[in-house]
Amino acid sequence: MGLPQRHSATVPAAPRTGGPPAINPNLVLAVRFLLTALVCGLGLIAAIISILVVQYYNTHDPIIRPSWGSLIYVIVLGLFTPIIYFGYNILLPIAPFINYGDFLYSLFMAKIELLLQFSFCVLWVSAALAYANDLHGYENCTFDGYFHYPKPADFNHVCDLTNLVVPFNYAAFGVQTLLFVFEALFGLYTFLYLDQESINEPHFAWGRRAYDYRLGANQSGAAGRGNAYRARATESEGGHRRSGRRGAEYADPERGSEEMAESAADSRPASLGARGRGRRGYGEGDEEEEERYGDGAPVTEHGQAYDGIDDGHTDEGWHLREESGAARA
Image (cartoon, rainbow, N blue to C red; front, side, top):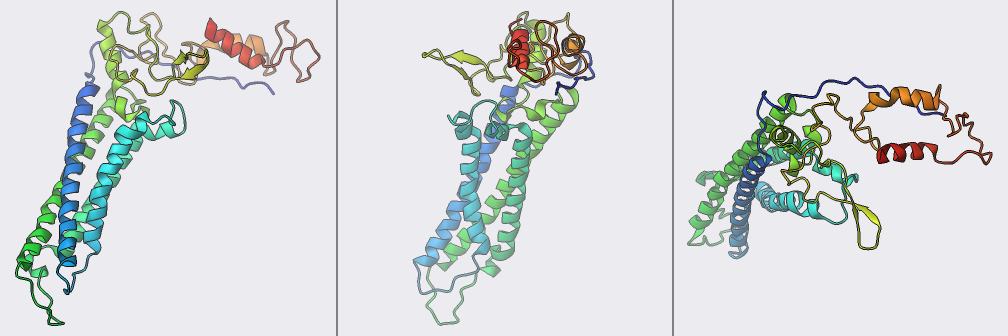
């Protein structure tokens, strides 16, 4: 069965000069880092104070404890937040078992980052409201003397700690919401005015392609550089080829994007699906493919149609030979 014909609409490349400006992705990373660190710090403080409340009741037995459902939730969420952020933003991107182009690599897409931020907004507003409803106010921190247990002399201290958690919960939720709104606005601006593929970029290189495209207007060699959004094959010491991971190509401002940094002579940007065909998009090789494949059936190098039967005169892997030949060209 022959390959189906490929067609796609082509549009002129966006002008490098003029139009909306591209935001420096390093600035976006810096703001995200500061807001994320602030969220993690506030969450840890809330969790530590909540742990002190639990420790107070455990060291003053016999005593009747209040309802601790929301308190335990704050402790878990406060410790869970920095672990997730550290793993997702720092640990996993450099993990050796996640390579560029793997399925797990899709976890780093910007749209997954937005979904993660929205999820943490929901978690923190739930924690803040539940804790405030259960334990906020000194009227909810009364000593229960039902069993005539002696009241500790420093019982007001645990009431102060219990009420101190409330502002930290709301502060963590507020900063988390600010982080989500900032990323959502940046993503919406980039998506609408600069690059519609930006939501599929890795979150640590979010906006890099659009910025390099704008920056390439003042750099003569930006259009000819390699594409940072495809795996670069590097030679290892043993002669084997291995595909690069995130590496430094995303953080290198000198590297342009092949899809957007097209030369001025070629107004048809390459398609992401045109793998192995250099910079040609779907529509650029249709006439050549029709001559080679005919009505859908592949042909041999001698111009004979290939009927799927190996008679000793046809080579196997004709489609791979076509792809590799175009790539070398």
